[in-house]
Length: 132
Image (tube, rainbow, N blue to C red; front, top):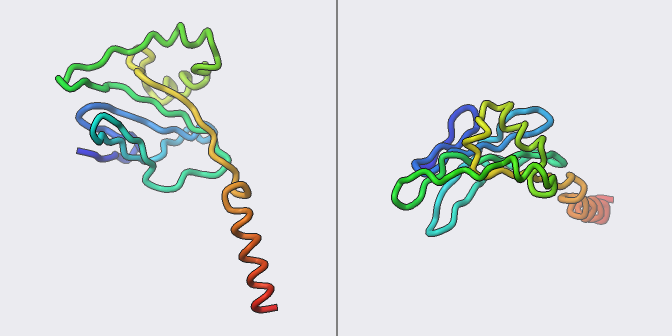
């Protein structure tokens, strides 16, 4: 089934995932689920604004229930554009063995002003027009 535990990791019968806030080293609770041939990773709550996160996937299995092989991350570390060394270090710091990481990446969320700035500006203008 699709569930998450108190550490924020999602554990399903075909994979184990984690989403980590790099600044705090705290996991973000999320769901990881499969629909058809696609897998989805979705946070339980909105992620923090202007924050870098690292995502890790391990234990992913094929349709026969066999664990898929892990890619040798050492070759990816040569090209920092693919997987930054600190991305892997974040997962290892969270207790993951480098040999079991099948996928990993990082991303940075937008700032609050980028996401909400124009909406809040419109709201302020409407409030000023209506309520003076």
